Amino acid sequence: MSNQMNVDRVAAAWGQISSWLAEHAPLSSEALLPPAPSEEVIAAEQKLRDYAGHGFPAELKTLWSLCGGLQPVDLPEEDEDDGDLNPHGFIPEGNLLSPEWAVHARLSSDGFASESTPLGIQWVPFLGEHWEGGVFGRYVDAALSPSPVGRWDAMAGLHIGGTCFASIADLLEQTVEGITHGGGPLVTDRQVPGLEKGCLTWGDPREPLMLHPAWRPLH
Image (cartoon, rainbow, N blue to C red; front, top):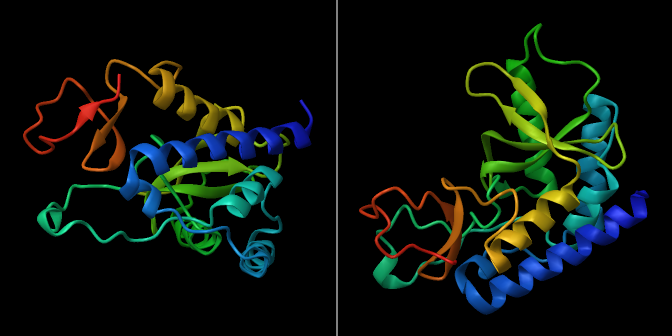
């Protein structure tokens, strides 16, 4: 599949996700930043090139041209004390990072690298445990086209896992399938999409709802 086809798939899938959020999950929709300014992407990419010798893959730059990352959301007054309410968790694999936070996550995580860290992977974190990065999430391998997606983890030394999605487009399309139809590889007996007070999040339907009494599966 050509690189342009994967870029087009990213744009189409993201359009479906953002439209769905606008209609059904207003707090999650409010968390979306507008498209990243080109100068912001260029500056972050140059910083990554200076450090790691490579830039961003086309699919990721396309995604940022549609949404530049996530931002804090003012919760309704009655929910201000609900620290577990997460408007950013609509992609099950992590929270979308801005170009700046993606490069920050890469540079800060490399300090935990060891001899077991694989070489040759031009890894770019683009999903994190929260919208400002964190110590684990999903990366995209800029060395390949299309660029596969895998897991990165710097909680106890840097670990770069094997790939689990063929591309960003695959991840987004599977997210769409889970949200709209309740099916696809992302939906399991332990992980389904649900709504909680205007937020789309993915959770385990088997767990008690004590901490999230308002969360309900979509399907």
